[in-house]
Length: 182
Image (cartoon, rainbow, N blue to C red):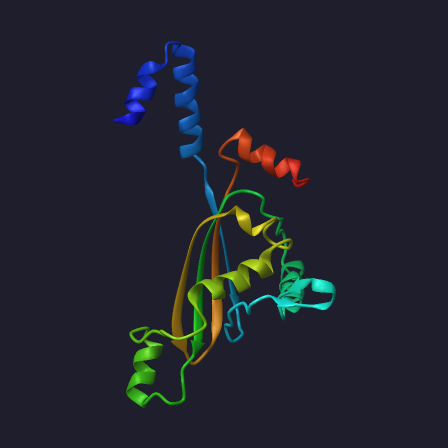
């Protein structure tokens, strides 16, 4: 395979040993978990609008960020995350009144799922944008993510984050440090 070939081209035993140590270091990264439930009706991020003087804005984004900032400030021992993040966003949309009672029960059980707007990616964008600067240094830290949509009589958004306990390499650490964070 390609990796075996590349390793076989290394002539110096110390370089090969250093490389293997780096792999072991990356594989030993621990992932810490944070979970939040936000009780509100899930909404997708609207399209950006042109404001005065040609400046674009997203309606409601400022209020969402302020709300999440207040929530984070009320928590204890939460520090700004600056390492790689894996995200799961589970949105529970209100059960439509037009469903019959069988469909409503099946929806609450998770057997009938929403196939209407908001789009799953717009849902995630709303909540990752909310977290930026208060929980996440930047939403570009998210390396992996899922978005799931369900119906429920109790609309809400459940957010699960797993973040690395350290950087996987100096390159990534330096990128964050150059941005003035840490």
